[in-house]
View: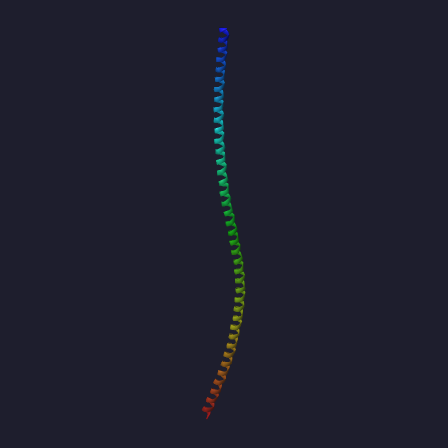
Length: 146
């Protein structure tokens, strides 16, 4: 009977030892799983931060790109306005040039006519003067003969 009790105590001790060993293994497994969970959460947070940073940079770049597009559109419009103004000024210049050339041609014609008229008048005046000089000479000869 003592042998049975001793065997029983030995079996109980073995069971307690097995239970403690299982308990320690479970504790270690739990610690390992907890560490892995914490690491996974830290990794997840890191990835979320990276994604958040990436998204923020994406939004910033999108804003910058929109600014560039607006500037490009404004510059294109400005260039188009300047081209339109240059064409208008070119047309105005051509119209003024034609008008000035017409005025110049008309003025040259008038100058030519004035010169012709002046030459004709001068010739007529010279002829009249010569005629008067001849009259004077004739009268002087008549006077000398008397």
